[in-house]
Image (cartoon, rainbow, N blue to C red; front, side, top):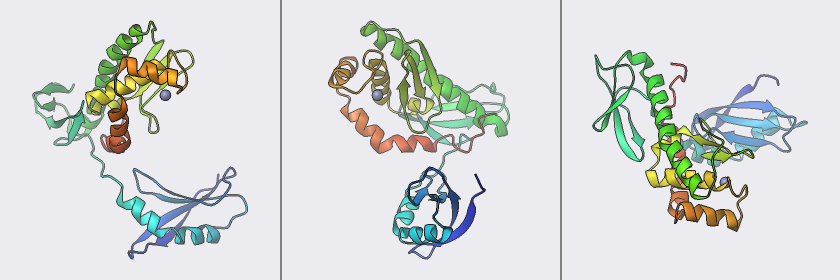
Length: 241
Ligand SMILES: [Zn+2]
């Protein structure tokens, strides 16, 4: 892959945005992409298309680009004073001198000691661990209701999916689910556990979901409306810290 070429695109509102142009052997047509999280604008060229053609196409789509850019949500890093949801309830991160370096809930705050510059990574690990602690018992309990046992339960940092179930019965969940309201978390766990019995989305599958978690509709609606919002939190936090 050749390094992307940078160009400028003028939007209808007078703003100029930089656009990267890259080639893709697999692209079937000129594609225009706006990063949901970083707002990066990219043109992908199929074989045979020129950068001029790509920019020409992009210039017919400036309204769409402006619209996409206006929807980008601001990142909330895990830092002192940041507020993020835990099971749907807002909690504030509070750097407390002398507090242990490992975060701990103190009332409606998450108290954490240690160095401010490594706080983000520790809060992220704590939140990830909370996700496992909330999800694991739920998954085991629901699985036993249908006479199943999950092979392994893992927490991931996935962008496109809230959960998945593999053929051998491994369940994976996004750590970000622990920020959603409890009834939403319950639905996603029920959904993946139901796949232990039905590895499809048939009526039989949805009947199992209903049995494990009656009335999943509001949760599915919540995820469609608010799911992207959960990706705002902890961004800009170096996972290695
Ligand atoms: Zn599914």
